[in-house]
Image 1 (cartoon, protein in one colour):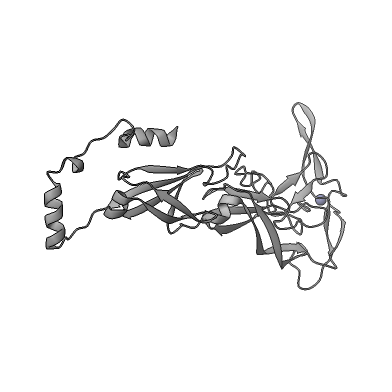
Image 2 (spheres, helix red, strand yellow):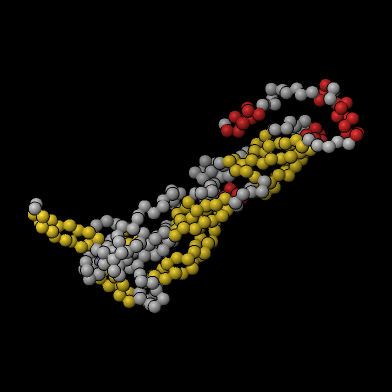
Length: 289
Ligand SMILES: [Zn+2]
């Protein structure tokens, strides 16, 4: 399997030749008789973050052209099976010999002899097949995987095209992805911030319980090492960064209001950041280091 974005480098090299294998993806090998390559097929696969995190296997139904049973081939009479036609022209420099792909057979050296009624002009017919696609961990939205030879087949001794799989990432309800790292926004109440708490959070491998220390500051980032996405190149796993947000009540009753008014002048309620309480920008810097 190849991660490279290899959209067909082969255009339609030869034009429409009568009865030949024209219009296929390209050639294999060089010189003389050529192996025609079937065209590539493209599909999309939609994956959850959980599937991406650890890699998965997908069975996908694909409609691909395959050689119809009962199709037979014969040697191309135009090029006698060589796949090339030579032309000799007289020029002022003398006789010149040029070779070009045979247009009658598209360079394959073969043409259709007999084919069943349900096959197309190239002796192919569409068949639904289930293809197993191995998705490595760490793929990203927009990436393309190549499954070799699972595209459309080519006639005769041709080689099948490839199946190109475009990756789509389904949005996760509570986790945001940033490369191999994941972010989770945790909202805790004012009381939980003051008294400490134990909360369950989502990860790509199920729920995990974390402890929030008493006196936690809003904006604190808790790093759960190795709880992110596996790197696609095998460089370990990313982290899960839990962002602590303290939820401030918007409406207070009389009693609560009186309490907080009293605390407004209490020394214990005055901000007093220590060196260990990093500023937001230091934390962001930390996240990327
Ligand atoms: Zn030919």
